[in-house]
Image (cartoon, rainbow, N blue to C red; front, side):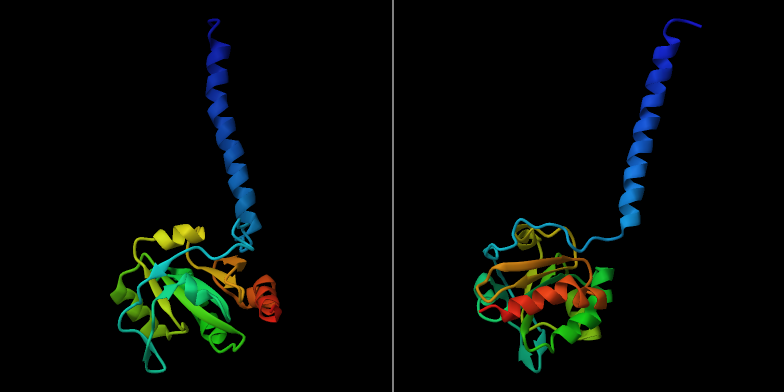
Length: 191
């Protein structure tokens, strides 16, 4: 055996150890489950500047829906839901959005993210339209300004237009009984 043998063994073991450490890290993250409480540096700050055109040919209660801009987020407590027709978790949360659309404490609006307008219309026509306004973000630029990691994400916006809370992932009954529901209630109680 040459003097290089221990050196070669060390260089062969190193990648295996790195792979093992990364696998362990990924396994721990998977076992923790999805996190809907990712920190956001935007909490407490004004919603970003944005102006998005409407999703054409979509109505609610017979009235064509407008687009969406930052100016629309001042006044009532607003939930901004980032969604797409191609997003499976968006379909999963849709019944909860329909329930939320009946909550008189809030106004529910949507940002349609990187979607084809025809697909978005089919999605909403099939499942129901919970939104009071929908802005289309075909290029995804507005979502970047919001700090979106992926869809769906929902932001609770206080009456002053500041971001009160960020929920990552689909809205579930547990989320509405937990931190998201608490954030809606707190925001609704603020003057």
